[in-house]
Length: 209
Image 1 (cartoon, rainbow, N blue to C red):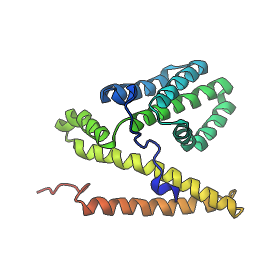
Image 2 (cartoon, rainbow, N blue to C red):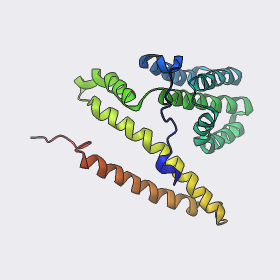
Image 3 (cartoon, rainbow, N blue to C red):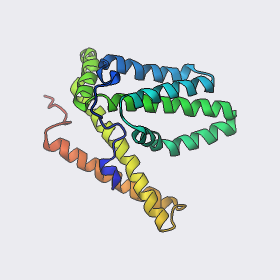
C-alpha cells in the first residue's frame, strides 16, 4: 500500500538557499502564508503568492513530481470546497479560497522538504518551551507533530489505494467500498503507532501521586 511509505514532505538533501535558511525564518514563512489566507481578498494575488511558493519549492531541488504529489494529496478536498464556494459565493471567491489553501500546503511542504525531521522537531520543541510554565511538555508536543506529519499522508495514501482498488472492481461510486477499508486501515495504523510508542516508553502519562 502506498500509504505505508507516503510522506507529503519527505526531506530532500540539498544545499540550496532554502535549505540553508534558518529554521525560524521558515517557520515565519509558513505562519505568514497562513495569515495571508485570511488577508488576501483577490484571487490574482493568491495566484501570485502560490506561484512564488511553488518557485521556492522547485528552487530547493524537490522536483515537480513532489510538488504535484503535495498538491494532489488535498485535491479531492479542495475540489469539494471549490465547488461549494463557487455555488455560494461565485468563481473569484472560490478560486481565492482554493489558492490560499494551496499556498499553505506548499509552504508546509517547503518546510518539511528542506528541513531534516529531527531538526524540525527540535525547533518545534524549542518554540514550545515558553509554555512549559503552563504545564506543557515541549517534547510531547514535538512527538505529536511527528505523529501527525506521518499519519495524515498515510491516510491520504490509504484512501488513494482503496479508491484505485474500488475503481478496478467497478465500486468507485459505492461510499461503503471507499470509507470502510480506509477506516479499518486507519484504526490499524493508529494501534500500531500506539503500540510502537508504548514499547519505547513514549507518550505515556507521568505517574501522579
